[in-house]
Structure formats: C-alpha cells, structure tokens
Amino acid sequence: MIDLYSSADSAAQLILSRTPLRPKIGLVLGSGLGAFADSLADSVKVPYAEIPSFPKSTAIGHAGRMVIGNANSVPVAAMQGRVHLYEGYSPEQVTFPIRVFGRMGIRAVILTNAAGGIDHGYSQGALVLIRDHVNLQGTNPLVGPNDERLGLRFPDMTYAYSRKYREIAREEAVKLKITLHEGAYAAMLGPSYETPAEIEYLRRIGADLVGMSTVAEVIAARHMGIEVLAISCVTNMAAGILDQPLSHVEVMETGERVKSTFEALLRAVLPRINDLQST
Image (cartoon, rainbow, N blue to C red; front, side):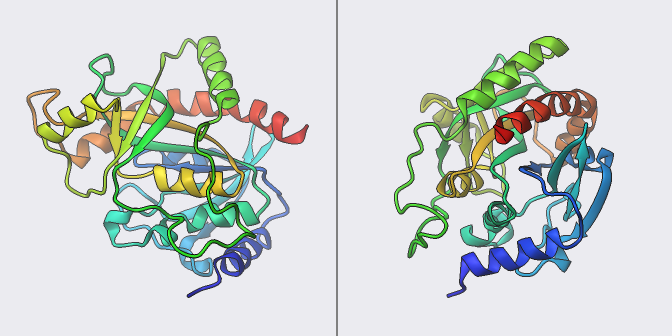
C-alpha cells in the first residue's frame, strides 16, 4: 500500500517548486469548463504527466494539466480536467489531486462539473449550486485504513457544501444578474448515461442533477478539513426528460456556450472566498 500522505506531499512540492505563488484556493474544472484556467495571469502550467503519482485524465474535454496563476490578483491552482472512476481509476486515485491540494496548503476548493438536469425547472446551460449529494457510485474514497495525518476516521458530511460559500455565490450571481439554481447532485458510476427509469428513480429520491464525478472529491476534501463550493453546468437534460438521445458533443457545446457567464461568476466569487481564507 502506498503512503498517500507522502505521495501527495511529493506531488505538492513538485508543483510549488514551479511557481512563487502560494494559492489557498483550488479549482477543479470539469467537461467543457477548463477554459477559465487559460485566462489566469502569471500562470505556470504543469502537465499531470510531470507530477509524481498524479493520475492522467483520458476524458474528452479535459486538458490534463495543473495551472497555477492569478485570477483578479487571487492566486489559485486550477485543474484543467479530472479523472473519473469510469476511466478505471480507483477512488484513491480519483481523489489524489484533492490530497495534493491539501498538502499545498489549500483550504478551499471550487469544484465544477457538467451534469444532466433532472429538475424540470432547469434548462440547458443552467448553473446550479450543489447543496447536497447522493453517492450512488458504489464506493467511497475513505474505505480502508485511515491515515490520521489526513483526517478523522468518520468525517461529518452534514455541511459537505459550505453554506457560507453558497451564500457568497448567490449574492454575486444577483449582482451579475445570473440565474443561479440550487439542488442535490446524484453521482453515478458511468460511463453510460442513465436510463429514463434510473432518472425517475433519482428524481424520487431527491436528486435534481446527475453526473459521474465530484462526490468522491468532496468526501476527500471534507476529510482533510477543506471547505467546498460546487457548481454544476446543466449541459443536457437527463434521459427521459426530453425525447431525444444524449451525447457528449452536446455536453461540450453547452459548456462552450455558457463559458463567459460561468467565468464571470467564478471571478466574482474568488476574491470573497480568498478574503475568508485570509482572516
């Protein structure tokens, strides 16, 4: 068994050696949403392949590199793409980047994803704050021996998604005249999209959105005491909601269409979260 703490520490030291910046906020940019990292000032790009033990992204729309730079003078570490369980990675590998964030001194993460909309009040391109989740991926990144250097054996998940961060996001969305929904996210294993019957099941158990990522990362972040804000872009309506097939091309096209709105919200939220980290 690998020493997760030491491996994450080695990866963190490699990344920090490439830049004088010391970010306190980490970003995980999902399918079609990675362009934000390209706009960072004074940036350094580190391919995942150069980071020790770091998993390599194979998903379409995921560039596969860490970008450290300034967003409106706020230093951030942004992941252009993540890895998923459906790629064949273990829960430990999927959450390794979050462990690295923690060893870099990051105390807040903003997770983004492309999701299927279950709530009929959503439409393609809608932005949704995740307030809670349902883990239906059949696994948990904390299974196995617990390393107390990383966190407690039984972390509380009552407030997995920071209420304060969500309040900030709602306030900034109002200022920007952005419609920002809020809902519960169901995580499925994938990579096949869900059937209409599965979507009806998810709706009945309280899910407003469905996707194949994020939840394991949230669990690992909370295990390490890292605060979480998560935002979904509804890139398609889930199976059975509309009478049409689903495709990943649709996911990418919708992500591109809402890119400017999404980036504006991120830029407004980052300074306020950074201020909280500085107090």
